[in-house]
Length: 177
Image 1: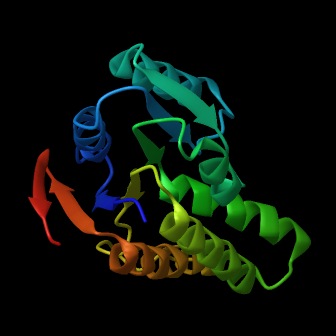
Image 2: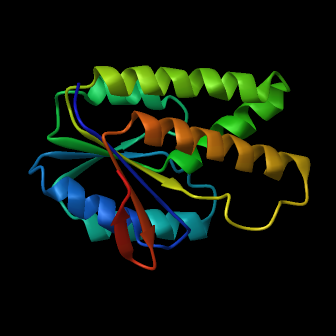
């Protein structure tokens, strides 16, 4: 089983930059598994900015929904794979399952268990980036509260599975595990 590194923190805390620096220590080639979906100009600009910052040693794989399958397909092709980010993946799943109104939390839990199993079988080290969303106010609507709860449970599961866990606060990484 390859090493799994889990990195969490608030929005704009420096998680992605820290994750990229960690990944570079593995040498190239590097895989960047992006879960974002470009839905507007602002998100398009964010994606462009991230790509420019990373540079040419990275291969970008875009997969907003089928994270486990994408990781399995990339296994062995890179020295490390960075997944940025778990929170956007959860958001994509939530909206996908909300459309069908079927056991949203149960279906996401199944996806999470698939991800956990995939990570345990990987030969390539994987760095997971996820937002810590549970440190703010209680959201004012049921969907936002469900998302916060799902993200919290997912982060706990992935942190427990990971070999190494970091939290980034104001650009400063702290190793927790």
